[in-house]
Length: 464
Image (cartoon, rainbow, N blue to C red; front, side, top):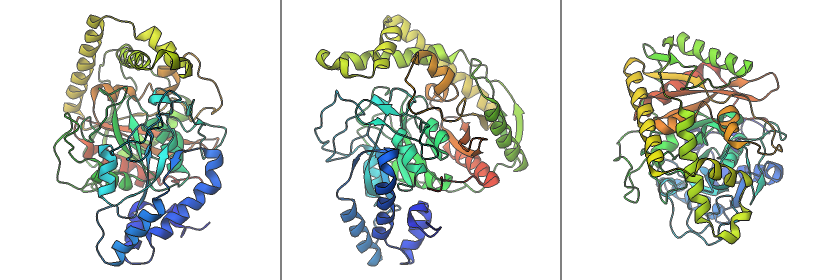
C-alpha cells in the first residue's frame, strides 16, 4: 500500500483527481472494495453492501469524462448508517425484531448525497436502535476497531466509525442522540460532526427524535464540511428542519481562531470522569488553540445536573420503543434496552414535562454562556476505546461513567459539536477532544476543529 492508493485519499483529493482525469470513480471504488474484502471480515462494519455501487461509479465516470459532473460529491464513495432509509434496502436498525422489507424512499440526508453524485457503498452497522455506545448488536454481532481488533469502535454509529478508520470510503453518515457520532469518531481517530438540531433534515424519525441528528463522519475536517454541504438541505418531510443556507461549509474554515474566546469546560452539570491521558489530550488541544490565537479561559456554564434530564429522555424513548415491539418478539431485544426502559421509562406525564423544562433550562444556560464565549472545549470520551467483547453491564451507570458523560448535554441543548482527533495514547489508541458552539454556529465548530487538526497533524487512519 502506498500514499497513492485511492482508498487512503480524502474526498477533496479524489474530486481533484477526477477533474484532472488522473483517477476515475471506478478506480477509486475498486480500491475501496478491495480493502473491504480484505478487512471487513474481522472489522464487521457493514450491515449490507450495495450491489449497484460499481454501476453508479461507472455512471459517474461517464459524467466526468463528458465534463458534466452532477454535483459536489460526484463519484465519491460513501456509507450510510443502518438507522436511515436507503431506497431498495431494508432498514434493520441492528435488530432481530425488524422486518427485511426494503425502504421505498431515501432519508433526506441520503437523498442529498445521491443528488450530489455520491456512490453508496452500503449500510453500516449500528447498536440496536442506536441505544448504546458499545459497538455490538443482536443482528450483526460485534463491530471492531480498526486500530485494535480487541477494542470497540464505539457506538451507536459503530460501523460508520470503523469504516472511516479502515478507509472503507472517505465519507460516512452517522446519527447522534447522545454522542453516537462523536464517541465512535473519538474511539476510531476520525472527525465526527453533530450539527445543530434541524440543520440536517431527518425522516422518518427514530427512537430519540427530539434530541437526535444525522451528521458527517470523515477522516478530515474539510471532508466533513464538504459532506455537510450535501446533507444540510431543506426537506419538507421534516417539519423542524432549517431553511437552506446558501453556503459552502468549507468557507471560512481556514480563518483560524485568532481572537475567539474559548472556554475550557470541565463540568457539564456534574463531575464527569476523565482519565490521565484524556486530560493530557485536552490540554494539548487547549495549548494548540491558544498558540493559534484563541483566548483560553477555564469556565463553568453552571448547568443543572444533565444526567437526570438525559436519563429520563433516554428511558422514556426506550420504554416507547419496547412498547412498539410485538410482545412475542421482545425477547429478541438487547437485554439492556428492557432494563433501562423498566427503570427509567415509567414516569408520569408531569415528570416528563418537568424533565423537558430542565432540558430547556440547560439550553438557556448554554445560550447565556455563549454570550461570553465563542466556543467551548471539553473532553469527548472519559477513556480511549474499551474492550469490544465485554458485556454491557449496568447501562444506566455506564451511560454517564463510561460512554457519554461529555457528549449527551449537547443533544439536550441542540447546539453543534465536533469530535476531533488529537493523537494516540501510550497504547496506540486514538484520543480526541470536543469543540462546541452556540446553536446554529456550526461554522465556528468547523473553524476550531480545523485549527486543532492543522496544529496537531494527527494520523488519519491506521496503516493496515
